[in-house]
Image (cartoon, rainbow, N blue to C red):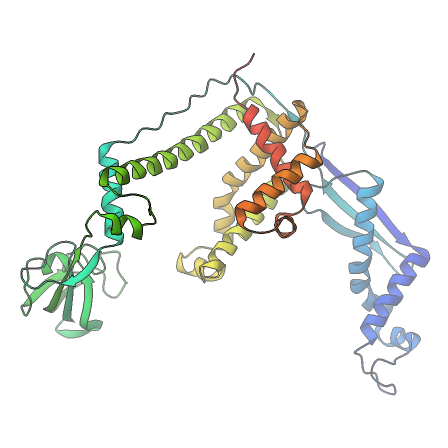
Length: 416
């Protein structure tokens, strides 16, 4: 492929000698050799005992960075992913590196305007408003003791229960004053359904069967539960009044009509955002089908690693490590890598598409516009501009982001 560059760099003479000397000083620092104090072994004695080959690994680590910098500088290359490095020769006089460096692949744009991609129109139905109002009311529902009546769907039944398999108590199958929300499907199929209709103080025997996808020891086994209802609780929905609206953060709303209008606007905003995202994805897909590009597997692999790191960080914020997630889901790193490859390739393809549109349309962002955008974004995040830029990656990243957004605005436009 044209964007794969094999570059050889040799480090020799006094440069290599200095690096080997630095490697020796690092090695000998914590070394205790008979007849010498710790860290004081002379170089000639060290070399006699351990050989110069013992210095090569540390020396290569030092030399590789400078050699790589020289490779990309002398050949005016801009790598787009991690290079491959091989040490092809090494001895006391020199080391020779071979770097395989991948640069941006060639992109040949096809048609990217007037693609005929249609954007849906957002509509909100009365049913959707009703459902959202009910959902918001449910969030603020009060759980109260149900004085009379039987257990119905949506109630929380406080129960004592004891399970038996083959006439013996089921391990972990006993509970007292356990609050079970009916409809949560917390227990095996049939358990919650069996409690529906029971009254406080009533005891009932439930004869059920564990599902086939349950644990190996219990799958498809018959089980008997003795269940007693100790208390029934129900959700009482709040009235739609000013207090309710205020609790949801709508301080200025006084009537149900105003509230429903606000709910409608919120649904409309969400739908418009979803429609815009789908439209952009459809435009990018259509335009990418018209372009020609050959993407190196290494670039896709690099994007997968970036996605995995992002996913790992999201898990970490939830208090879960990636290894724990893999264990919970019975998945391997290789499985996740394979699963992410199609999305990674799409992201890479779309990124090069947008960049090439920006190049063809000669989109440039000046410092003043980028600075104003940084100020605006910092204000939205509630931080000062310097702090925002430090976290965002600097003004050049803001410029790149603005350039890509302007290119996206051009994509799919009607041709003049």
